[in-house]
Image (cartoon, rainbow, N blue to C red):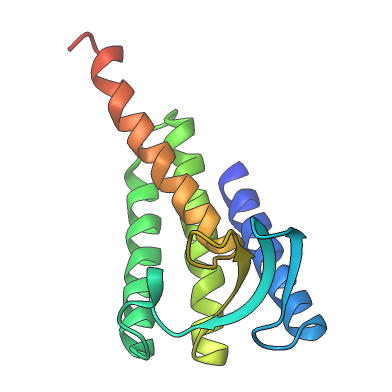
Length: 148
């Protein structure tokens, strides 16, 4: 049950934050939160991380759909327990759906968190990265828990 609550929360937070940015800021407008460290900057990302493969919207839609289907299929066969892995997959699914919605509706992803030393990103991106981190952590601790 908590799986779909997490997915829904990530999706709604992501889409509402992007809608707020689009409605209140001009494209490329940047507002300093901590000057020269952290800004809110409205940008459109037509590619993946770091803007790679820009304007390959159909490719990213297909990859996102594949990821969504793989997560849902894996969840179906995941044994009871594995709570951290379920949370990780929920974060990844919510993030994938958030960015997928942008690509389908707009042809690009709205990004706005700008730390100046890293590409601009959004809540969906954060959820995906945190989810991957949880998967890595879960995999790293699994052998120790089994005494390997």
